[in-house]
Image (tube, rainbow, N blue to C red):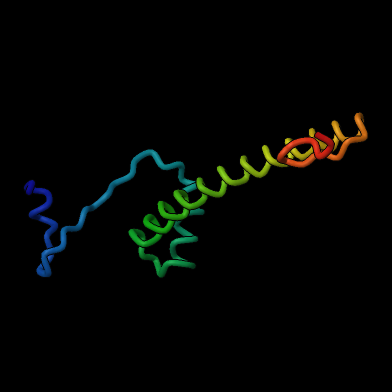
Length: 97
């Protein structure tokens, strides 16, 4: 355990870490700080953790949106092919085969 961790060790054995952020654009910090005060009781570590967890979950949704878009494009291609050939297409292939 480093000296820094020892200095932040609480009586219950948990270790805390102090985080310093530099060069945070002031107008963006004001927006972040306002949200922290209004929605997290001015508890900055809780706001930071929430933002971290939210970002991880949001990345999953972005991947899902990409997959949905790919499926929509595949369906559109099937519809286009159906219109040209007069055959009904399914995701499994041509029903006239």
